[in-house]
Image 1 (cartoon, helix red, strand yellow):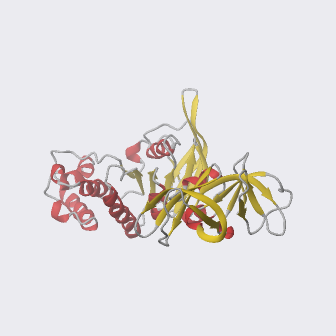
Image 2 (spheres, one colour):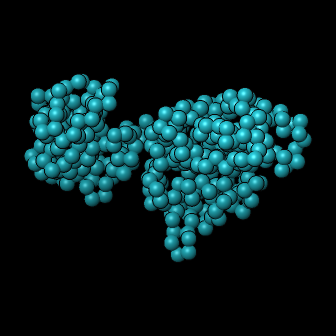
Image 3 (cartoon, helix red, strand yellow):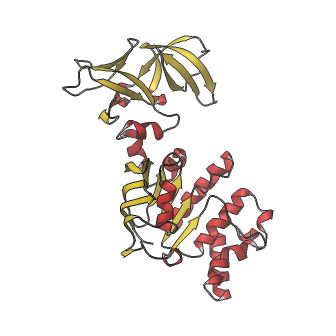
Length: 355
């Protein structure tokens, strides 16, 4: 195990810079998830950590050693890719032990390490099978087992669950988290799925257009996003955003163009009349007689809750309601935002003003 320090790392392809001075400290044994939309630079950063991409400037350290110019095989890391990359002509046991065989480790030691990894991942009954005889989840576990036998200082995961169906992704998510809790190996995990990030990470690093927008614990990012991008990216369904102007007073509120008044607990001096974006999460809306009038556009029952897409003036929002109300498209309803859970962002800079 080892800490990882990514300091002021930049990456350019020709004259085009794709990473703009990224700094991410990762503590020994921490599970860190790099998350962001496609093209944000998260996989590029992981490949630079693995040694598969050269660094334009900045430093990457594993433990006390700067690894900028160290070959991938000498970095003491193990990587699990999106595709399993298993050798089809080898059994599970041979696939898992192949990297050790290349390092000329004695066969007895290879068997011992493969058995240990197989026990951890419940692969022991499958050791004599070939990849074609395995399910997608079993193949991914074999790829993880191949990484475990190397006993690396750092695990790197590059969207390992993308090829699995929804139910299997949930199961594998739990397995990877349990594996980390058991091995306590420093782990860097890349995904575009913020649900994976929220459920697995000790620390989330939200990236966008080659920069780090915010990093912190899952609930820290969920409850206190620094800007509109992080607020909209973390959470499912996404946070609602309604444009308006801030009105200060004994009871401050945000007034939309249609005249709807969105309540706040508190405001700040000097912001009266300022154009802002009011943010409220779907679960923080409830039916109330003194709420804001909205027109129902779509009703999506999921069983435990109902998602209602409603319209306030020309602006849409989503409400997640646990009460089973007989509403249908076209109905007029009144929704009250919880002012204690509201966020206010500057319309121009999109930075958080009030939370």
